[in-house]
Amino acid sequence: MVLKLYGNPHSTCTARVRTVLEELSLPFELVVVDFAKREHKAPEFTAVQPFGQVPYLDDDGFRLFESRAICRYLALKYGGIGKLIPDPADLEKTAVFEQGASVELSNFDPFASGLAFENVFKPVLGLETDPAFAEKLKGFLENKLAGYEALLAKQKYLGGNEVTLADLFHLPYGTLLKIQKIDFLESDKYPNVKKWWAEISSRSSWVKVSAR
Image (cartoon, rainbow, N blue to C red):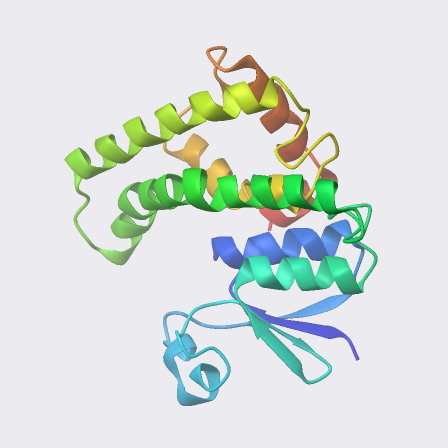
């Protein structure tokens, strides 16, 4: 059975999972959930995803939601060990990977996703942007990237010296920063961040997903 990903092409979290599917060269069917028709709030959808959010994965009847959990599952089951996540038997490498994944979730996503909501998604939804709040989020993110710079001075990638899911998780919201003319990831102020971002954002998997 071909993997089915229930999501939307414009969804950042759907793009996160699609990137991992491409990294692993896994055939899949994208079952488009129409936001305009509020299909993500329909009873048949919330029976699987109780929060009414995309995406969720159907792997021959096994259904899983939350994009980062889906990505870990795919890597563990379909050849990503040693490629996108460390061998779980290597406790130290796994711990460093989980540290990097936690950094993304705690120190990047809240601010990058908040900025995207204020500056990108609110206008589309016909909502009024809060410039003061957006500026505050921007300042928080810049301060966090100083920590990224220090970390990436010691290791090549966020989860160690090999690319992992911890790096790929940044791609959807990191790319939206450029649309907002926020250049922190490409600034000479953070040379290690700049080098890291240039490498992960040019991976063929993300180039393919972001082109759609």
